[in-house]
Length: 108
View 1 (cartoon, rainbow, N blue to C red):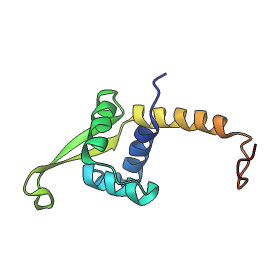
View 2: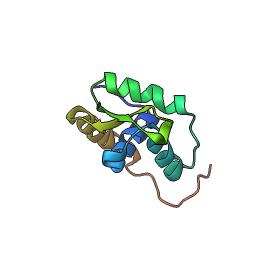
View 3: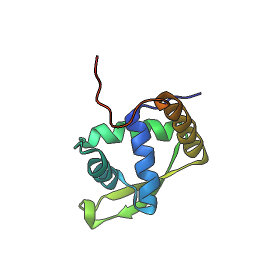
């Protein structure tokens, strides 16, 4: 089974939530809103390309857009493989978190 980094999982989940509006900038903005981290464009682009090569993502060329200075926007969507892999990662994460106390600070 392929494994995903936390950032890759977050990117796939962002694409899931953004639906038809998932492109590089909206994905980065969504991640900042949810995680509070301000990722550089390359920090998002590189895993997007890896996920595409793994078959987790499809891309659609949206054509030239004034949003990005007339360049084409590449929109992303999850494939069946992407959904399946996210589901597998969720099961693993749920098992890893099992039994961890909520709201209790760590003490030695």
